[in-house]
Amino acid sequence: MDGLTAVRAFVVSRPGRYGVVELPDPRPGPGEVLIAPAAVGICGSDLELVAGQRPADFACYPIVPGHEWSGHVVELGPEVRDLEVGQPVVAQGVRACERCDRCREGRSNLCAGAYAETGFTHPGALAQRLTVPVALVHTLPAERDIESAALIEPAACVASGLLEIGMPAAGSRIAVVGDGPLGLLALLLLRLATPAELVMLGHRPDRVGYAEACGATAVLVNADGTEPELRARFDLVVEVTNSAPGAATALALARRGGTVLLLGISGSGRPALDPDVISLGQLRVQGAFAASPAAWRFVVALYAAGQFDPAALISHRFDLDETPAALAALGDRGVKALKVLIRPN
Image (cartoon, rainbow, N blue to C red; front, side, top):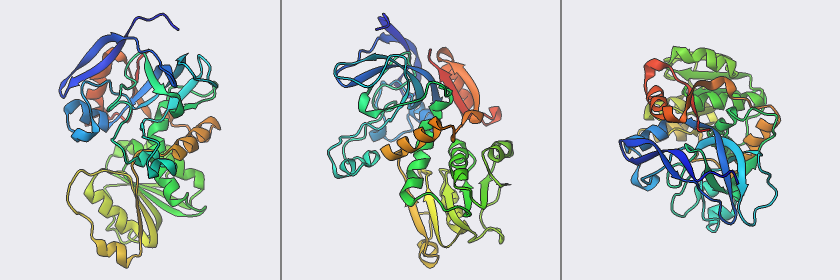
């Protein structure tokens, strides 16, 4: 035990109302681990949470956000074995029922029970201390950078979709539609397959250098898939735009018999894709939600082996007291923030 009686945490009491407050120091119960977060990534879903824009079934107030994080073990709860105090760790966010058909087949990200996830319905990592079930914890080697390990969570979301379709064969032609953090993380994972082409389509010129550093063989700004040299060209297209037009672009890029992986959530609420494009092209279209346990293990193993290093994507760092400024930076296109981290400790 570390002797704390209270911890500081960023709390969203209700949409639009938030701040850093003191909370009782959480204690690990049976089967739980107490962790000191070292780095916490924020993303668009955190902005939605603060603004009250997440669907009611996917948010709970008051809440401590923070679903992308890495940290160190502080204390073990009763019945917890095989972990040591000080060990660097990450943990899966989805808290599944472990009883339904999807959970029993190892796809707990698709749990049929009520939605529950760290940082949205359960206290997240924007605090000096966090408790999580030990069954969700993944250990990391001490020699790897703990800060960039906070990006394992979003990378696992990308990997979850890739594992559903199977990693592409060497020499494949691959396109990634969307130049946000998920798109760049997709490049880092896809380049491991040694593709013949790995093309990124985006809308932000300031992301071109990042994409090239992540393995893109070409970066196209403001292309929409209608270009003759791009249409029906790629074996695999990964879409991460969170927009209906982005999904339509992805379909247009895929060759006949190709595969399209849709990772973005547009929120459009109505059909926006032409089903004939899928049928006539005999396309395989795969969606993905959150990250499966297998995807977590996959990315953690790559990270431990030094094959996945997202450190270059971290553009801004803030302390816990500066969380409002961090959120503002992420939401301001003029700041050109890519991956924003908060350091609670």
